[in-house]
Amino acid sequence: MKFFIDTADLKQIKEANDLGILDGVTTNPSLMAKVGISGEEAVMQHYKTICDIVDGDISAEVVSTDFEGIIAEGKKLASIHPNIVVKVPMIQEGIKAIKWFTDNGIRTNCTLIFSAGQAILAAKAGATYVSPFIGRIDDSSWDGMELIAQISHIYQVQGFKTEILAASIRNALHIVKAAEAGADVCTCPLSSILGLLKHPLTDIGLAQFLEDAKKFA
Ligand code: E4P
Image 1 (tube, helix red, strand yellow):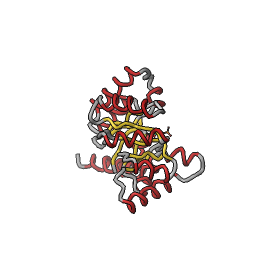
Image 2 (cartoon, protein in one colour):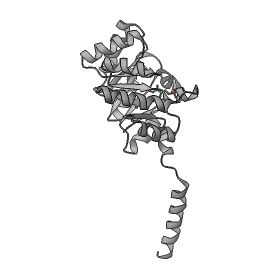
Image 3 (cartoon, rainbow, N blue to C red):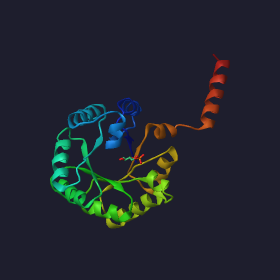
Image 4 (cartoon, rainbow, N blue to C red):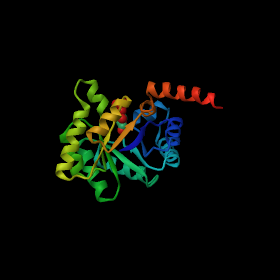
């Protein structure tokens, strides 16, 4: 399973990249706003900076909702760097645009996926990735992991090549469960990635080893 970091915060992106296990980055307009990036020029420059830090797929989201607008924006974003993946919302115009991008060699991430039907449609249009929003599904008392498992099963049975990118991850357990359910990629906050490190027995065991090592120093 690939690891992406889900943020536009450069400090966190660098910290995750320094771990040596990072395969890419996802952002969205809310994450951009959170770090104070707004306006086309600033957004484009920020994506360029992220591409310079991380050697992997970088999802850059369009904010247009009509076919022509999505295509124009997506072409501009894709021209920033070969690693840019154009993130397109799961709407009727979005599906049309994903098919156009597929036919024109531009990779896409279909975002805001909340059902298997949406995931089938995105795969039919040739999306490189689909992003089911696990946390937001769980927040509304449905089971996000069940959706990952269902999409994984359908893609396997049907031979779809689209990769399942588990998004809206809230904690380390989500990462483990997404891996189990068949996600190809997990995009996570830094805190959830670092959460995978934690186990009290590791800390206790290490403290003991370091204490015992002093006896022979
Ligand atoms: C990533 O591609 C999504 O935009 C993101 O994971 C959404 O996460 P949230 O539900 O925590 O906002």
